[in-house]
Length: 113
Ligand code: SF4
Ligand code: F3S
Image 1 (spheres, rainbow, N blue to C red):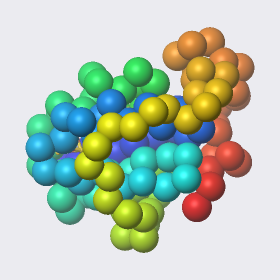
Image 2: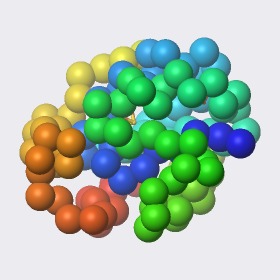
Image 3: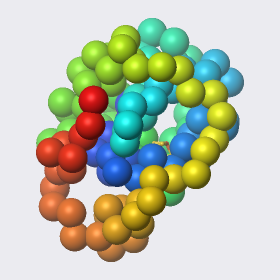
Image 4: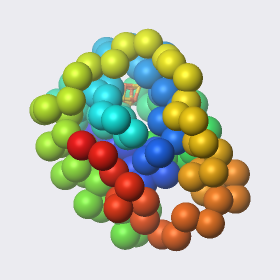
């Protein structure tokens, strides 16, 4: 079992999650973070820390976001590790559904690799 970063992280990247992870298993792309499924110890500490409500347990992924399980697997292999919190992306709130942004059901088109 692992936790998974999903859609609403894209273009927000608040990084509060990184700070609490005891095994440093977050990996960072230009505008999204992922969790390495083989390193995550399933502690659940990161889930409530994300202001964008983007982190879910693998078995509780919202319908329609199942593709993020594989995306975390793939991108954790190629992106660098991140172990310290940093500033969110500029305009994060404009792309944050939790802040009322009308960004549709998927922000995948904005994902930068
Ligand atoms: Fe790290 Fe725990 Fe979150 Fe897994 S569940 S990514 S180990 S904080
Ligand atoms: Fe992304 Fe939430 Fe972490 S927006 S960077 S998963 S705190």
